[in-house]
Picture 1: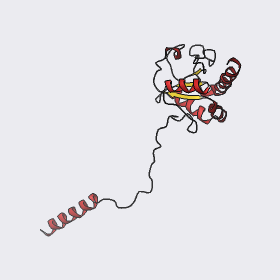
Picture 2: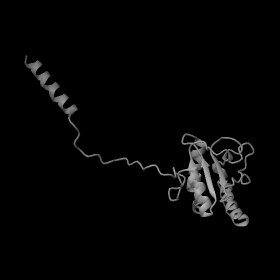
Picture 3: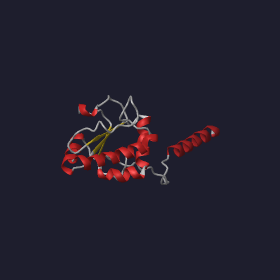
Picture 4: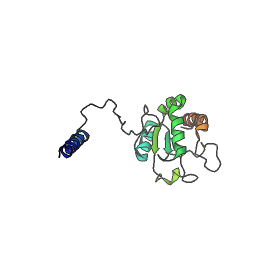
Length: 168
């Protein structure tokens, strides 16, 4: 009987220790940054929320628009996003643009140009003309860029600004 009583007492003590709440404070807390309109493409830049807002701001502000169509689950989009966000020249030059990145397919058929694919970067001038004459280097997906093409994207951004000054 004494061994049974000891066993039950041991079981009660062991159970109470396992069920006891840990009162020590957690020193490591993970903070999750809130999702911004940049979606990681440049958190210090001003991004617009919708295509309609972007067109309005481009026209009224006389600035070219960059539309970046991408997907959160696409490795090519993620690689381009990283290169775009880390390129100091692009981040500085982007301040002169209206910026929009979308994770859905555009409803404006003018943005389709050569099909639906991601990542896709399209320029629109303040007169609301989609600039099909500012492509990337690929013949099958003319408006896509790889991380290794980031300098070409930078040059195309300069070209969009230069065309703005010479054409308008």
